Image (cartoon, rainbow, N blue to C red):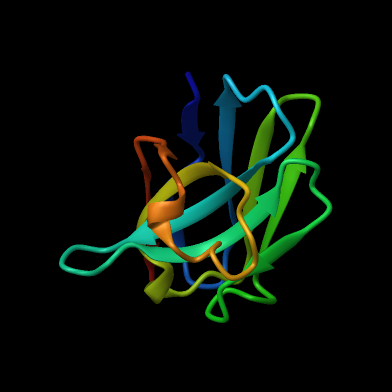
Length: 126
């Protein structure tokens, strides 16, 4: 059973940095990818970033490219989302997700990820 645990959310000001961590348990093969999505009230869940289990491939939403970095810590079976130069529009609940055989085309589709964490709140104030 795959389980995901997010941590690191909080409140920061515009331009500051925040790091989110997703610890994955129960993943026993190298075919899974770890992704971050975010959601604000009344809106659809939005893709943020994805990384393969090996850490060799990754992709970002245009809205965060150049500001956020996703990385994989294989020793700890965790993925980190480093959020730099945050903006008020980054305020959301951030979810970690895991799915297998994710491609660059399907990475943005939340239905491709059967496993989800509980979410962590990120609030950016101006």
